[in-house]
Image (cartoon, rainbow, N blue to C red; front, side, top):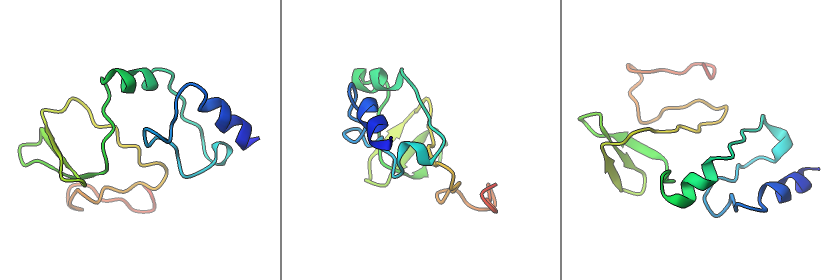
Length: 100
């Protein structure tokens, strides 16, 4: 069943090519489905980047693990899954205990 679902989901959009393929199989977690995301990625309105390393000191930019930086960002989508973690934030700002 998982193989069938994966094949259908990847017919029009190669999730692995855009680093959107999860580490789990479709029926192992709650699904997140967004019909608009592939179009926005392909048109350049959404940019896929590696993990966030830190925010800039002015609070308007982000430095990524690959060393690239983007200033004046509109939105950060933190797709952390079910293991909530913010390693780039000091624990005095936000701490996570028991995934809460």
